[in-house]
Image 1: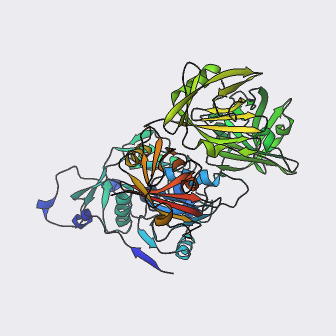
Image 2: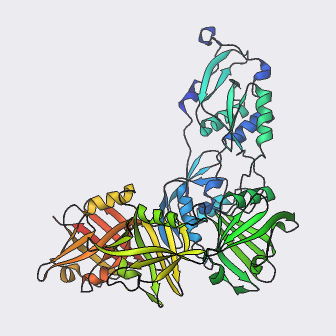
Image 3: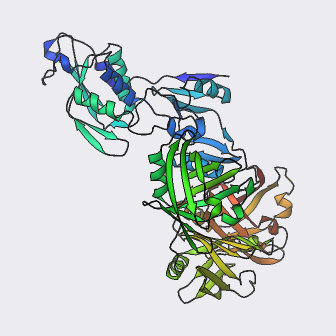
Length: 586
């Protein structure tokens, strides 16, 4: 176990904070009074210090500690899937992976070494897990009150007048960040510097609103009032379970909620209620949209109990939901409810889901972009593999095209009505598995889910040239000729490219066609599609002939450069099962 401490150098302006009796060096500005000076042991000075401390709660999903923050970028493995976190948006990616399955044990592995920033803005290099755990032990206990203030911040820059014992100003120091402010105030608290804050100063609350203060007393009162005005969420995990009735009410009314899991009397009813959509209204009315389009109306209310916040749901027909449920966990975009006897409901917030579905809206969504068949199960057989790299294009005149080997094959489609819902009929020659009356059960701008008895299909939107990363991949692939330089199965080299792929060349055409040139048998064709889906992927579809038939797959892109692309096939646990490397031929 080895921990390296790297102490940040004090900023150069501290070298100027020297006391002098030379009157020539006094800056001609209004002299502060002794009452305006920051006293080393005063409550105001401590408040300014607490406001400038580093808040480490935002990345608790990684380090589970609010008194430190992992410096980005950092590489982690979430349930075995390796990802690089280079912004705060990456925390949501980890949660999305954790939320994918309810019955698994979520695991996060940090790839060391890492650098962490402490509450005092010092940085520490951590070499391994044990060193990190030892450092975390120095934090406040979970949900204990800490001494940082997160509900209000200074708007920078601000400035301080520095003066000598006779209250003559000898310097003006400008501060432009929390780190600079914290370091400067530490010198004030250690009686190394005598200073006063130059007013007016603008303070910003956590909700983005601001207030201007004009003296020490106003600043003291504003910070003191704001200290507990927001939820600092300092619990050392990524769950948001320190909530109130008001927060729960506001959260429920913010967006629709999609049913993800239901258990009653220890029996799973998830298949029955999956993807029902709940809309909580201001007037205590809750509406539920069933997958078939029917709307059920009930009532909801919340109250505080000895066991926490509870929500009461009442329906005439939806009896499995009609209980008083206790809220036992709120995570990012998800609420878990329970009652005794093995009853549980899990809801996921979805601000994009369409509740008021109309024929015109469905047609508008379909015609905006191409659509990938991301999932297809017919008669218990998974047919999705047959549609890799072959997106659908819906046209205004009820014509639908499917892109195969770079060319569009025409068919027809129709939006119909079934009871309170809508169905999609697709007719394409040679594609009987699509020629069903598909009930639209779930709709949002980029996702459509459909059912026909026990058959299921998932369509995901694919807009051309709309993603800069996908654009880059496409631009790289369509230039030049490529060849297979590595293919590993199970991390054991079982196929020698010089024997199995020797002499073959690959061209990626802008039309979505793959041209494979066999030195012995001529040219064969396939389809390709680069896209994003919680990561970047390259879909490859080849004819059912060796050796390229083994490469038909939705490959996750591991690395891409102008002359090389590495692709990986992950197992259900996130381990790499296969590795494919293509390089540009000289």
